[in-house]
Image 1 (spheres, one colour):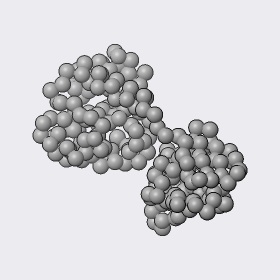
Image 2: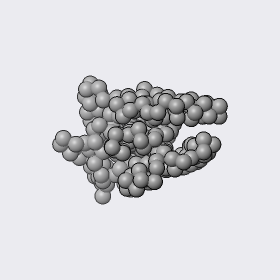
Image 3: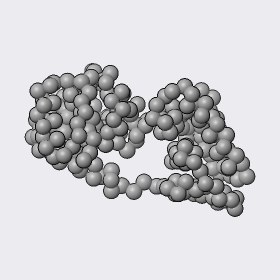
Image 4: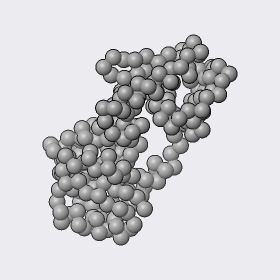
Length: 225
């Protein structure tokens, strides 16, 4: 059973879609407006988001950019009219995974959801990273092999290093790292993040090919020669 966050301001439409999707075994949470989307996303951790463009303020997809900071692989399906699809064209394929014509059949929504979830499930993300000729990071095993040493990482350390490795040579913001590790933005977690970054730097200190830079006011970059 999948958890679906459904963004819909029309209660009659919501009732029809909810009945169909629950009949197919899905669990549905509804957000009636953009103020509820982020809150429910953090609370329920959905497998997929289904949104009607008409329920978004001014066809603005910025809320989904925030969600992508925490889960870049989450499928987001948008139900949109032809005019709305033209306005949102730049977001389709970048922030929006796929769109469904507003003149849809109810069965089409369920099929699109199943297809999007299967695509994510069958994708094979990279979980082993060659950071340099002397350092290899195995995320699934939470193991860092560096300069002849084998270091067992904590879950938080492995999560941080995964984000830095995935975005090597690019900035990873502190907000993204806190979100990935703790799923919230509590102030004390930023202090915990600083502590874990000190540990990770110590682990990689002996490898001259790797540097972790602090970008003041932004985040960190993992650089590899």
